[in-house]
Amino acid sequence: MFSSPERTQRRRRILFAGLYAAALGALWPAVASGHFILQQPPAYSVQDGLGSPQKSAPCGQADPGAPMQPSGMVTTFRQGQTFTLTIDEKVPHPGHYRVLIAADPGSLPADPPVTPGGTPCGSTPITAKPTLPLIADGLLLHTAAFTTPQSVQVTLPPNFTCTSCTMQVVEFMSNHQLNNPGGCFYHHCATVSILPAADGGTAGDGGTASDGGTGDAGLPGQLDGDVVPPPPPGPDAASCGCHVGAAPAAAPAVPAAGLLLLGLVSRRRRRR
Image (tube, rainbow, N blue to C red; front, side):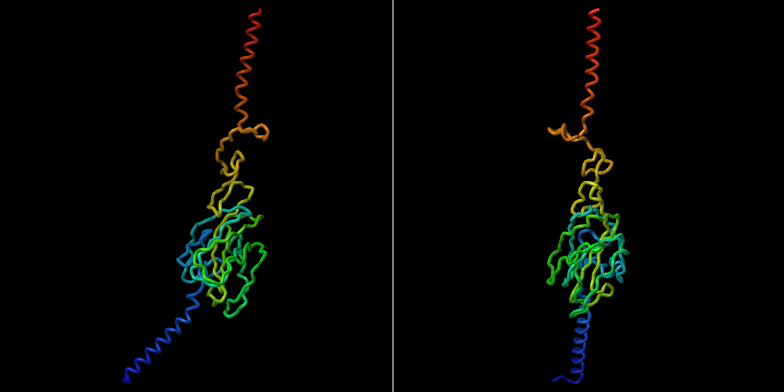
């Protein structure tokens, strides 16, 4: 049997253990909340090992205790280009992703409405046919945890160009308590430029900021201002309507005509 002081000490230990478990239970929704790293295109801000800052809309720029540090990364695309979006969900949670694009963070719309379920974050509508500023919705819809980074193809609008505009990637989490800030959403942004498709060249699959425009000779894939050598003549050169490289071939005709004229003059002098 325990003596009175020992019983008192044992009761205190049991009480402390119960309070500790209750505190962990209260903290669990915050600890288990989903976090993701935006890998491609690169985020406009420096991300930590869980992807923060990312709670506050529209770009995680006002997260408490996690000041935003610009990464300086800018990605160049072409009108209508299909690029690879890659995320790494570090703390899993059921949900999906959406992609928006606007001139700047202040032009992005608010997060969509959420209908509570078993938790405050029950469900949110998925737009089947998105229109600007929304360009994709319901991406990577999942209920089980991802074990590796996930990639999905996203197509840019064919009639939209911009310089240093904002691409927003948003994670919606269902079966989740409310974040403060952010509610049921996590947010990342990337700085992108979208060039006209007619500018020529290829920007790559989410390539870095190179112009890739039309060269001075009108050849695709050359930077503006580059010196482009004329293409070698081919069997169809005469019928293609191309005139590049034709002028040097005509140059020897001038001295040949001069020699012929001198020959005629010499013959006339001899006859006289």
